[in-house]
Length: 375
Image (tube, rainbow, N blue to C red; front, side, top):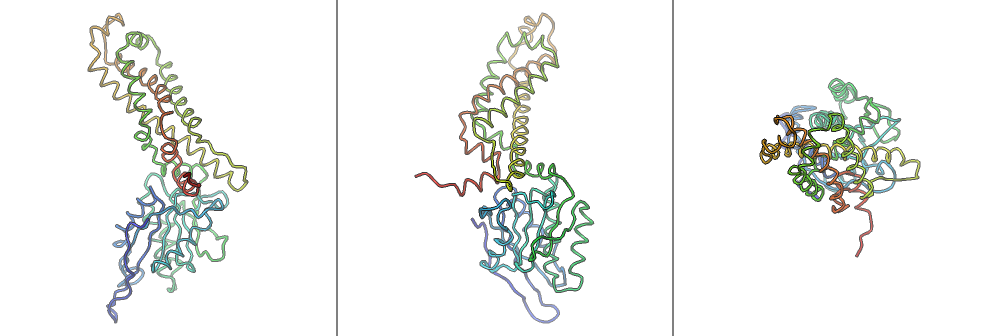
């Protein structure tokens, strides 16, 4: 789906003061890649003005669509897709932003550039997950400048030097494909890619996505906060047992979501096994992070609710001692664990499409898009 489209612009005027405007197409997967593309479209024109030579201006168009063409593990040369779209749309250059991981020699690929295709590929899962927008701007600017300066004698030096100086972990490598002029990998193992995939999935969305689980948790919490047996248990249970209850409740919730919605993936194809392991690990971490966020929100709500509705004199009668704030905290903590387990049952009411969209990210979008529709 195109979110914006503009006509191609060429040189304006003649002579030394002529202004050349280059139209750059940003072809992005939905989600974080599109968010980064929109940031690039707003920030790069000023960053790149008058580079690589005075009078050069840049205009950007953002197009959002699923970039998977089907086939092999790396999406069948997404850079080719970007090059084709550049020719179709009349763009001077195309930069594709994808959240599908790409690897070379066990290292994540960050960016590829093909002068022949007049296109580049930026892999969002390999960008710094703590500051993706900032690093994406630096990488995109360097790649675009390298392409724009292709006819200059320093075309191979300036953009690459700028990129390496700002991000020492990025390393240019020899591309395997003859038509690629540049490939940059990151000197990091699979944990970096895994962190990037979890960041792309945006696990905090899971809190709003699991409405049935949230409703079941709130109902269980409401019952627990006014239950005198729960009051007595909270006053007697040890801190170690409370931590164990937290771990058990989170593991139960994550495990139930995976089993009930079929989130664990299998593939016997050797070329896909690396990616399947990464996707499964990202699913577990995304769910764990999302459930922990839900747990903390529920805990905070329980503390405020207990402080408001549980009368100290009545609570003290069951504890057989004066009530302190710590007693309300322990009550809320215990109830949060019980409510999270109750929420696991409520998660069975959720649509599997909703859960998979929130946890599989790009993998779900691409697989779902090519799945035959039922009539």
